[in-house]
Image (cartoon, rainbow, N blue to C red; front, side, top):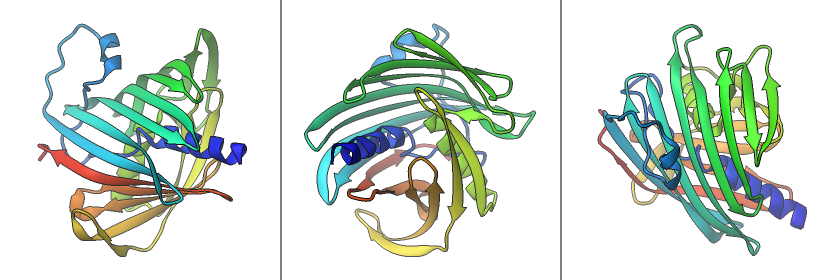
Length: 258
């Protein structure tokens, strides 16, 4: 049971930044954020073009276990994203904050992570900072003072925020399957994604919505549900565990982006 609870806690941590999918290549692009980790941002002023705010509930086997929020501020072709979550999973408390910077690569026509700073207290506590180079193929990761380097020969390494944005970008392009790699704290995690047939669900408080499911296989099996009527925002994510099932559900969404 402890192994399963650890897997679900890891799932919750991994999804905290995925939850409010940004607007990909179709609308104004870039972000800044309003979290406690923003103190590490450069002194240069960041003038936002638009802001999105999304809030989610976390459920474990139908029981409400926590909340998470995400603020996005877009400007040009660069972005900053902040995420914050508090959850208690089988009595294991954790708090997560992340600030990620990303930009559009004209060389490879994709969203790439520039750097990110992640702080976790409680379960899996860590202070993680990562920077990326060589068009996203190389990373330098500092976890609590221990430094490691990672490299991918073909696919860019991304933090979970940029991975989410690139996933949505590929979905909007009409791709039916694709591969992405997430930079974790002590490894790189390759995933395969498969777009499924559309379905209709009633999602409070929006009512009936058409959803596009995307199945993820790899270290964690997750199904993401995107809503075209909500500008292809992520409205649900389901973790498929052997013993435990997890759900993250959107409960509030605000945007002043066109």
